Length: 195
Ligand SMILES: [Cu+2]
Image (spheres, protein in one colour):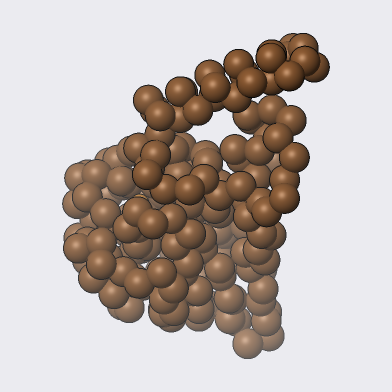
């Protein structure tokens, strides 16, 4: 517990900056603090996204789902996260045969991208080509992806896949979330450890 004195607060913030300086690979980049946020402790402020995003909307009759996938949504995994999650600890479940429209955003000055691969590929240093036709931001493996990109693809086969960052070694460092495709799902869902 931090004492509520100016000195203790100053020391606490100093120590926090020092930690970020050492462990945060994007220390050149401004952290995604929400504007006007009160600094009341490093954990909450560092992990707060700069704005709330709707990660999923769908039309079950049309068998179509719209996803918003944000790289560096918050400070999780040193910014190497999608929608605040990393290492496959959250992800999308989508019924087989649906059309998937992705809006990708990168909120970090560090290059990131997204490409759909089989989940085991996330352990490799390079992601290679997308598993489904068109399921990638442009030039994902060269990390020249723009700040915002849209793409669509069809999940025409069930299986365990991943939305992975194509920047070399990022996926192996945990920059991926799950994409599970199954005939058993009746609708699409964004599943997190909290629900
Ligand atoms: Cu990345």
